[in-house]
Length: 406
Image (tube, rainbow, N blue to C red; front, top):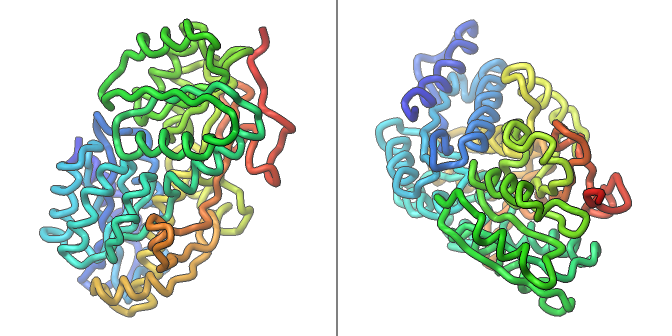
């Protein structure tokens, strides 16, 4: 699976670029890492990879970089830190990439940071939300998606406004999952809300014991936060529905994992996906710019499904590296890092830049203006862009969330 995914990505780009003339025999290699096989979040990984492919093809269609064709090489991590480290090592040594982007699992991003530092090449983290990714202060690590403290503090603001009083969190026992519990608990501490939490291994697929415990609780939670990634997130959501726990007229359910943004969500959930709440770090068309529109169009034409926040991160990750290569006039690691620190580039989700301050620690080389939304599906088979926007208030398309009718 890993080898096939890698070859498919490279072959697709090479085929597209074959019509170009005047290429140097050399290529500029950009590396990608993503979970393309279980136990990782495969659909998320594919969106991340496919966004990278669109970026690489676009670069080659416009003449490549520094007169050379861009070669994208994507390695599978399976969402496992050890495999992520091995993948990064291969990219940095055997493949000789200028930089790496991607991941989609915080544990992998955290593990590969020291590898990027060892080889002195930039790593542009995408879809890795744990604070520790950038809080480690590694000079080679930059992030173009949210940190837990950034996204869940804003989600907690929505929770406060919505008036939830009994919140239950079921999270995977990973850096990201523990971060969900920590940020929600801290931000809701002085609101009078009661927050309870459970953790489980990422490999757990039967959540019946925890869900039944919540169903028998007095009072029953009015909000459940599902902090899992991959197919197990969808299993939890389905099981909560089948048990009659959530979503109901009494209990809303908030899916923290990005798998709810994928078409596979509806394949698993069917009509049971209506009223589920999600938290994307970006929505196609917001902002409504020429780049956002052209990327969304190119992505859907190539892959036959709508773009989402994760796909935009894959695209932006490759393009940020490309902008650094152009600015530096070089593919050398130190020169690229310096160019990234001075970068101001308008991507699919806004102008990306990387602050150098470390207060708080997670802000170091973290894009601080990632657009954050709370959305709710109100009809079957909606895309994230078609869902109701609940938060931020200035972007809201409805006055309040919809609870499932009695």
